Image 1: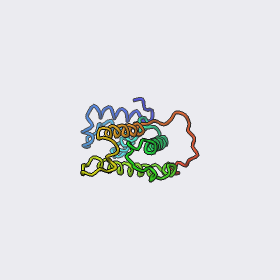
Image 2 (image 1 turned 120 degrees about the vertical axis):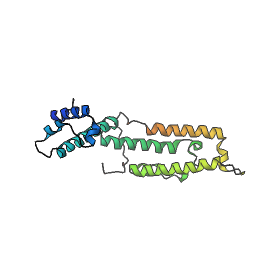
Image 3 (image 1 turned 180 degrees about the vertical axis):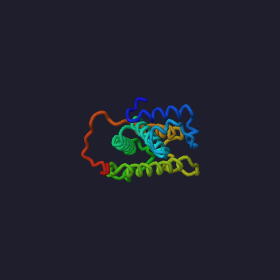
Image 4 (image 1 turned 120 degrees about the horizontal axis):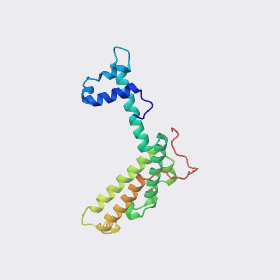
Length: 190
């Protein structure tokens, strides 16, 4: 009841409906307290509008509380994507499973993309890495470059280390200090 944006009559109607049961309301049986929200005989439409607005406000409040303001969400996602790109470029070859990193585009060209562009690049790297891991686990009787990446146990350990680093990046928070960068964020829609 602490929300000052909600009318007292709406709060009373909500309490009454809670006492009667919301399943009844969803089947069209409303508490009579809802009528106090409108002097119109067709009171159901404004009541349903009020309920939808209230529900939307609750959901927005929940999302803001959990994830921060929308602009902060964009910057948080961007920060996390940049950390993941850094991991792909700086982790040991035995973790990344890329034989020749010179095939990677210039890191700055990746970081200048918008968030979706960076995410697509990361998805492609994951797909290529999964393909490499599958090839390394197949036994064809031939020695391949994959076999020179260590034993099965060491490859498993390297994979766990790499996946752990990526998980940390995906859960990272925005830095507390104000970071300034001369690089474009690649997305001018925010």
